[in-house]
Image (cartoon, rainbow, N blue to C red; front, side, top):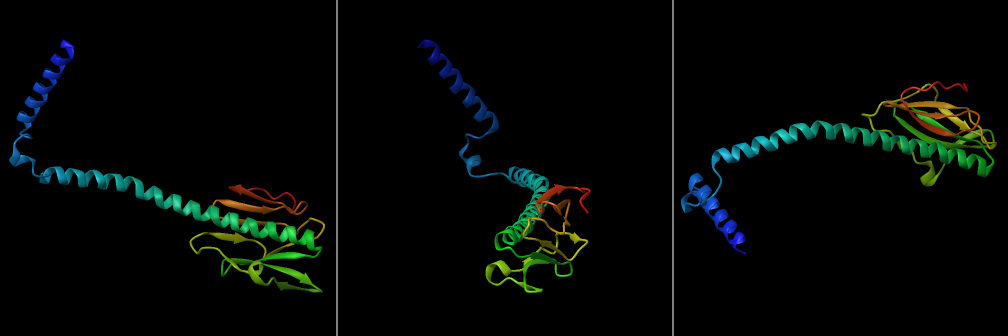
Length: 178
């Protein structure tokens, strides 16, 4: 018990000395922050922002690209599933000028756009690079397709001709089935 009291007394003495040395115990100096303290805080916050903001824009861009890839992949998977289920050809059409894609299905000898929510056009954000060598990919009822390679940023969406599966690949991939 005596050791605790000694430590407590020493601590109080040290704190008291520290306050007197820095003039923090004086009521006149305890009213707010000094100009120098405020400037230092502003500089620290500015440095943190300068380090974080450039990375956040890259992260947001990457999120947009990944979201677009998921949406385009979903459009292709939907067309593939409908072709097999309904027993008719479905086509995903691309318009590079508008940066868009949509689904059509074969009725008699022509392809007509789907109605309702399924026929909605998917627009790719203008800042995202979107390239393809063909204007559409057709999915057939037997589970095969005409094949396609779509480049979005650093990624490629590859639609296999034989299995009609949709695969997302980072970088370039050789499409050996063409």
